[in-house]
Length: 279
Image (cartoon, rainbow, N blue to C red; front, side, top):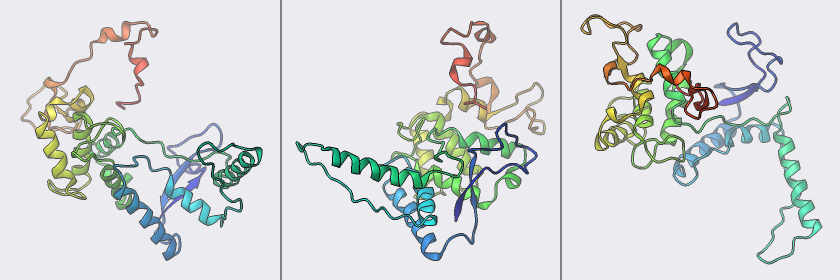
């Protein structure tokens, strides 16, 4: 079972903090965490989210809420209030609703004082991380089987009904995000027709039905590119000249260096487009 942890990283040589890791949160897999009943509750919540994924897209941080409420043995002691259409909202009704909310949210507050929340929704965050680990030969060093399973689960949960993925979890399917997530699923171990509910086959069909992977935006083409340097393209591939190696670099859309000459007040300047995205 995945459990939330706060303030970790002090012993990690690759992490640093200016505030003693205050507010930093991670989920860590513990196979022995929780009782059988709690693990069953978590699994039911996961499956319920998957069944309703097209109706309710955000996860509502349901897993960590269940964990925290269970650990603190929370029981709501203030009765809910209901206001019918046209009914006057009295001071007593508003006061009860406010106190009930405070009672609930104060329990969910972390020991560091913040409220943890999922930082996700954009559907091109996970694939580049997978690609970087893959091309640097660090997949099995950084990711264990539980990490890989959860990344795949996230992709399954946010795949649209037509088989593609949108720019974000609420968006209609687009070529770049569909290609990136399809490639990530394959790298994570799914076969051509693998994945939950034929996820890979459905994604590939959407890609082919909508013109093919070459219709990706420039970021998608960059990740697919090969032969970044000059030389014989038939020579042994090198990670210095190749990213995923499924698309020729000559087909990528160039970014003119003159873009950097714009003053930053110009909307087209790259600094106004969140450079962290393609990283």
